[in-house]
Length: 297
Image (cartoon, rainbow, N blue to C red):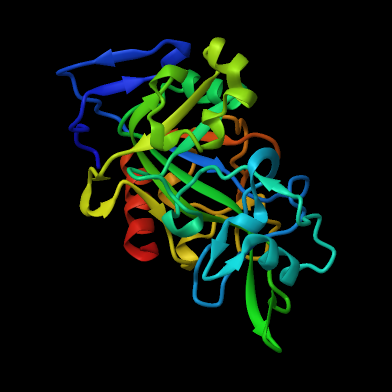
């Protein structure tokens, strides 16, 4: 992964779209991207299912898709949320922001569908300021707890810890920055909504990221997808609150955007607010990323 990316390099560096043909990008960016339910949005942890599935629950929103319309193994996300928490904030009228959209089977798809991830506003600016572009890898993480079946019902496991876990990924192949460039199969994606993002599109503050066909460093794996649970995917340090993370010792001191002065003697204190945490793909970072794919797929 330390070798040049093989496709033309497109970056959103410093709010300007730069395209460099015939010059490869030598340093990959790795982005830890916070997504799914949190204490304010959803109010309950996404489940680590008994079979190891990391089922990220999309945040509530005013978008078109209902929680009752998206499914996992013939159960709606609404039903899953209700099983896990009797007092869930969701109801039959609750809509969701299905983004990043990584699982084909979640809802009926248009022909040509592929995974997609949208970003807007300050979080998009964070990506631009850190020159995130084609070839870079998003690692999506969120708040998770282990679950179990008890009397035929899915519940949080007894003494289950609150964890930050990496559940999905995307290596960027294309970045859509103009509303007129959205293909027909992508029109159902929340960030393609003219109603919700017309002003953002006009101001250049909305973008949709699409994946490569396969990973540049492993052509056996698709360019976007989800992980199955492995302890290696857990960011939270053993015995600590979920925002205190543990990385390999070789990564100590790595600069991670939006997280100034976060390296402590015993842990990394991740920022409480913010979605996109960007780091350079140094050899220690890339070694860590390789291990995630070795154990989590």
